[in-house]
Amino acid sequence: MQLLDNYSKIAHWFIRASLAGIFIFHGFIKFPMAGMMADQMGMPTFVVYVLALMEILGGIFIIAGALFNELLTRIAGAIFAVVMFGAIMMVHWPQWSFVASESHPMGGMEFQLLVLLIGLYFLSTGNKTFHPEASD
Image (cartoon, rainbow, N blue to C red; front, side, top):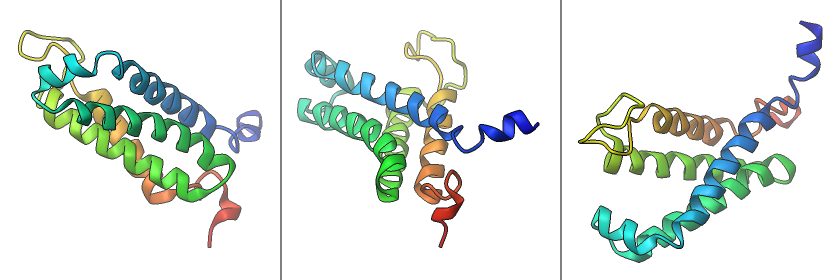
């Protein structure tokens, strides 16, 4: 256990790095297909651009929050939660299976629900869980 305890102070980077990678990637790939996505989802193209920017900023903020300012961690958490709530409501509801189906070609919502809850976690705790010395 001591070996694992030695890494507990940096373990938050596993979550931060994976979320940053996922959101930055998904944000950037939206730009070249914004028109198609907008048509497919019945929304204005600028909304897809705003979503892409939110995803990129969320990815940047979750990393920057650990390095510079807890507020950035909380903002990233809010962005993740809002984006995932929207994804669940617009695309994935009520499919619980990861398997794509005829009615839900994008698959289920387990992943989206997990990321939504992780976002709420970061929003509510900021860096306090990862940096106890940051507590009030």
